[in-house]
Image 1 (cartoon, rainbow, N blue to C red):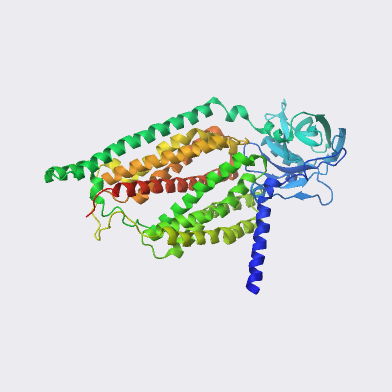
Image 2: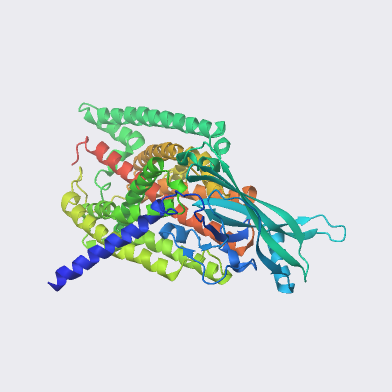
Length: 592
């Protein structure tokens, strides 16, 4: 009885946790419908330097008019908290369809400390973000006006907020904020902080209200279309080239070995010169070094590939870009639910190669990527706490993430490992592995595993190069990424190009009589992430105006996290493709 009660409690907590996690995509201001004179809440969110997107602080970290009493806080789901959002009720009196000519929010008395804070904010181009009915409003704290007596100009603070709200029947469609009445920042000034609200009808439907935030000319520029077409042509060319060269070469190899009346010396010469891959049939299925680690990264990469595909499809169908943090929440929940795949792939691979310590493999598979992200996130979180930024992840959110991993992800990885060991873990190599490893002859430098690995990532990176620019710009430059159809095509192109390039590299390596193809195929595909990270360095210095230790650490930290995931994903795809290729070619030869 106690065990059944405890299991019921765990199930209940799991259900509540999932409902909490899925709430961002369903979060709303009630049902988004208002009657005349219904109160409409204006939420203040964050403030920070415009050139540093992640360096954000609580809106009231600047000495603005504070809400009286204990204002309401709006806590979204997991993704919203991780995104550094903290919505606080401004307590500004706004009613549906009721215009406000000019009302005073409060009177701001400027002392020396407040003037210094505001001047620093103006010099660093501080912007702020509000929300009304889940629609964002943006504005700058102040500006620098020309001043004959100062080299940097006169610091002014905008004191009037003019809010224009467009509505369709009983629903809010669009909100816009313009700032007026700049006043100089001087000690002793008393500034009246005011606002006005104007309501205007519109024919735009509620379903189309987010379109105004989407930059169609930027994302649907002909360069974007051309890049997709160019990558698609690369896929056709590469797959055709791989099919023609490899199939023709392998057909000749098979025919050569099938001839029974050839001169033995000629056959040996042909084998050594043209078909070295046949000579390593007794070693090619030898268990790779560090089998536990390779099984873990391949299993994790297979999970990440499925995860990315699922999130892209859900973003296409569910327009996840509309909700604050919905993409992050979806990613975390889907990662937990797809952990079965990582365990299945890893467990089956580990057992097929004769691995005995499957528990160690399972634990490493379940914890590898989460703990890598945790390590990077811990460092970045320490920096954010030191700066007092909203980007700092609250302790409660860390606990929630850990609970998801411990009670959903880890058990599913365990289940997947058990199923993988029993369903696909039996050894079935086409060729018997010899007892004594064959010595690997020295070859030319371009056939060494390190060179093959580094060259393998060039073409996959070339296929996603343009899309990386749009992804980076959307994440680091305040643009909403919504073209997930493009992303789906690019992702499929990346998978195909990665598999083709890795197969070619594996064939060259085996032809050089080097049978250590497993790790080489993984790194050959994973090197794509190295080129993406190098591109991110170029992007940081050429395409952005970011500055300061905070933003620099966040930029390169988040990019490292992204590239690690991309490298593991591509590496797993490359290994699995090469594995199918190797098994296929050795299945058709006669082994002694």
